[in-house]
Image (cartoon, rainbow, N blue to C red; front, side, top):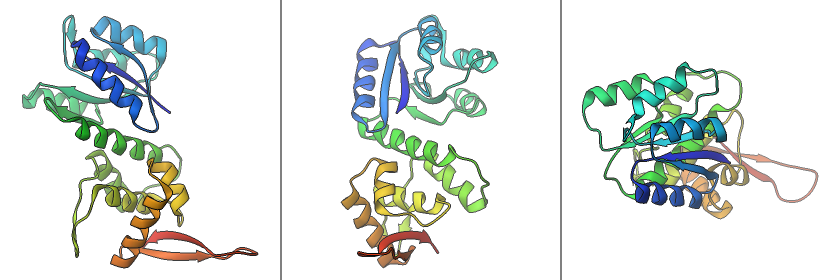
Length: 223
């Protein structure tokens, strides 16, 4: 589970975001904070993996909080900014500090869910060891942008199909629907349906693995 701390000065907004986090598979909300001081204490107490961080707080700003956390001795959580701050200087500073993504208020809850889903996939793909070639690096940056659909021969690729394709691309070996379903938080039939469609489009290759008995296992890899 990805332990998430919601930081927002608006109690109502913080509650909505916390409830949204709890409804997304793979995430749990470990607390809400409404000031810099509360957030700093909550990070120390709960050790979250991810901050949903508003920059406008009554006793300071989110950028200062990130600087303090980065200069401390403890582990620094990843951060998705959720703020009304639109000036490019703030956006640039946030990017320099390594925020995962920057959501400008107001935004819809589906957009927040898409970004959290993208972060979960990105986190799963970067948690192990090994090396990354340029295609892998490009795919990881695509995930951080929310797995934006890209054109295909059949029109625009649905977001879930794009996430599945990115997950196959990032896998070190051919991967099946069961593994992808668990990794992405979708049902196995959904994963298999998109894998079959990607195979039909020529985006992935099908590998049949035969065991001692029974039907072969379908696994997929990029060409």
